[in-house]
Image (cartoon, rainbow, N blue to C red; front, top):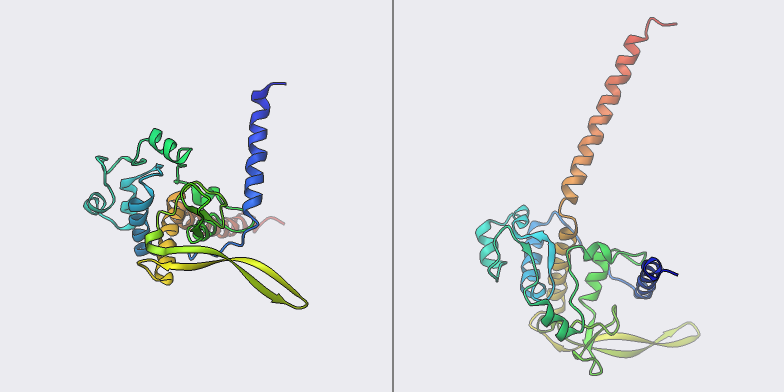
Length: 250
């Protein structure tokens, strides 16, 4: 049997299994609003400051951020921390060999992660929103961190100074005729932000990542509405023209 032919099938099954396992976690709904330019601008700044060091966005250019209301100068001053030019792709800030040595694997590209993580449990934005708020301390992990949504994740919690440190605790839940134990996250050491402020920061970040996955989505939907209105008008005109041409035919 040709291994090259069955390899894609094996990889597909493995990916399906991983997604199914992740679906068991209840996802919080992400407050996505891609028309909120202020939220998108804040999210882009968080992405450039905290994500772009290890992860790339190799299908997104810096100058596309002008669609969010930012000027070229604002992008250069606040979002570009390398020698990249305004028209360059948002590539990873570290050497890929170093990242593979430090994390075991090269961190994935994040351009379309908000779409690739979508499943029947929720959208990719829901997954990201829950994931970024579900890190907790775990001394058994090499990084010292684990995640309730992505167990045994290799990524450390890069936003821990903002959120603080969470721990996983066992809580007894009393039900009608039963008592069960659930694992719950609890804040053990506060960060520089309150939980509400941190949730808003993550919401802005995920809002931007959702936009980045398909920057033309809003304009595409708007164009689609205009096309449907045009076709509806043309149908009315065509119907009236048909009646006029056939009015003398019995």
